[in-house]
Structure formats: C-alpha cells, structure tokens
Image (cartoon, rainbow, N blue to C red):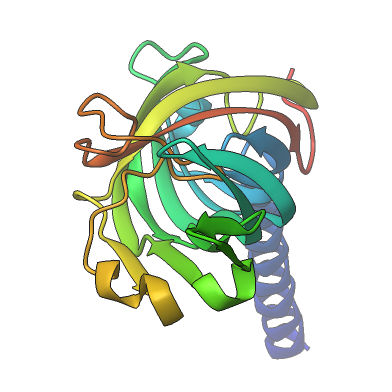
Length: 242
C-alpha cells in the first residue's frame, strides 16, 4: 500500500511539473513576443511578421514583403525636343529580414537588414508622329523603338524611425526612413530599325516613367542607394502585459 501511495505521489509531482512547464511556455509566447503589421512605403505596399527577441521589445526581428506594379500606356514625354510615347511597366517591392534596435526602450529605433529587391523597369519608347525627311515623312513604325530596362537585386538596408513592430499595447503605429545600398544601377538600352545605330548611347533615366536630357544631378544618375519612406500599423498577438 505504501509503495502504491509513493508511486502515485511521484506521478502527481511529474504531472504538476509538466503542467508548470507548459504554462511557462504559453506565458512566454503570450507576453510581448509576436506582432503582425501592414505598411505603405515608397517601394510598395506590404505586410510583416515580427518577433521580440529581448524583453520590453528592445530588439525585434521582422520578416517583411512589399509589392507595387504599374503599367505605362502611351505616356507622352519629350526627348531632345521630340515628342515620344512610352509603353511598358514599373515594378517595385522587396522581401527582407530586418532587425529593429530600440536603444532607449521607447519607440525610437535603429534598423538594419537585408532584402531581395523586385525593382524593375521595362519601357519601350517610340516616336509619337511621323518625322519629315525631305519630301517624305517617315512613320514611327519605320523609325523603330528604343527599349530601356533597369532592375535591382539584393541589397543591405539601414534606417531610423519610431514605433515598435511588437507594440506595448494591442495596436501601434510606426514611421521609418532609410535606404537600400544598391550600388550604381546599370541601365540597358536596345534600339531597332533606323534607331539601331544609337543603341549604345547612354540615356539618363529617373527610375520610373520619366526620361530626361543630359544632367549630372538626376536621381540615380550617380547615386548608389535607393531611399525609402515607410509607415504602418502594427498589432501585437497574445496577451497584453499590464
């Protein structure tokens, strides 16, 4: 009888210990650890999943994704005093892993990480009207087209801002400004028909749907980084600490 009581007591102690460990794990997951968010940035619209590594969310890891796509249809521009039409698309976005460090424990943060960028442009430029040549007019189809392409790959990220991805309350807001270090972008051009001899010329490009003449101070003409402004709404998962 004594042996049975001893065995039963051991079983109860082990069960109580196991329940305590399970409760501790549950409390760990519920206390200021996980958060989700949605954001709008100059590099697309997206969402994120965040995890608080240190207590009071002083160090937070987050995985985020953003995307934006826009078609360009018969957009009129001027190149060297000639009226041109642009057709194509613009694509922006990223998938990245980031770390947010809150050195003072408040909403102020320093961010760094790494992202795969989807930024890409592919535009076909053609003459809008026929071009006179002596007594004849040469049609846009006979003149040909110029295709301008551009894309960015993987890049490190650095930023500064306010707001926690795992907020203290249930809901929080964030604002961040930073940049991806992309290196000087390479712009690829290809010309057809009568324009083919000039296919190796350099066409200064603002990396969207605008084309400019020769200017050394255009955005991305000499810069090796992509600036980004981001704002969003964050929601903490689990229980709220008092």
